[in-house]
Length: 446
Image 1: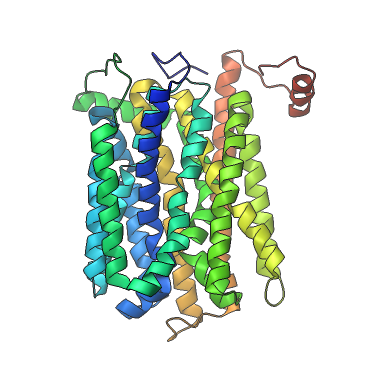
Image 2: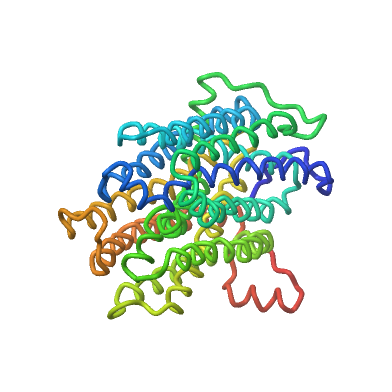
């Protein structure tokens, strides 16, 4: 596969790690803003007198804006650079949290979450471009995984401290505080972040015709599309669970205390922190075998959900722990999609390629969130909060449709990508042969 990291061949310096930490802080804040409504779901239903479908609509529109803006943001990223987009995104999310703090009706709350989704859309792929500019190619998969996983510290902050603050300080003060912290992080980005090391010359911004041609080429690239379906099939289940429906499922359907449910959501993030660097290392060492990791995560996720949904009566806590541990691999697994895009697209299309990939998981997530809310309301008419175990299990079964779509997409575009590699003389040997050769120290390249 062709390299897409021009001009970065030296070992990453202390300056590179400092820049990355600032960019990482912006992503942590974005995840916090994104997840803040999920743990406040029951309070949101009471504050806005809304049912499950209405509350899920808040998040669906937020994710719809996020997903819908990925390609335009990718094009803007290629044109304007990471620092400007991260700053714009941070201020937009802070404005959304400020509006949510004072919202007392559903339309205002929806507008607030749309702002959060718009700002969130500008952040992650901008951070990915920072990584590509500051670190050498062999390090990028690991740093990308670390970014995706450490960014989930925002989910940890939302899962425990935000819940405690919400119960102690109230809705208004909690979200005013979230807006204030978001502004502080944005000021830090504005003051310290740089798009690339000194001396790196940015290419001239493309004109409209070049942008159009670049988008077509990005979409036609089979590596981009296998990245999109990889992101879709691995990400959505963990995202849906963490962002909205996991907390009420654990507390209402399975009878766990809010503290135990919050601890499980924190465990989900911690598992990802362990798994992410391992997957990044494996992608760096076995770049032509990344789909094996994808299907391993997919199979584990489908199997454990099937056991949970078919379990008679309340699910034992150890099995719920297993579910959360497996879902913790979903986020790191979705990062493999960006690695496909990075290694199959030239540098000038990195922003748009990452944007296309990022659409997959978030479109699947918003469709699943909306479908779960609709099924819950359908099976529990007239009850805004009293959803029982059977209703939740029927609702979570909608995931199988998205898993099937994603599996077909990955298989199809893996076949196309491998056919192109074969035309270039790159033929994969059987996996077990490659593993044995690697263990013997012969380091096969195919």
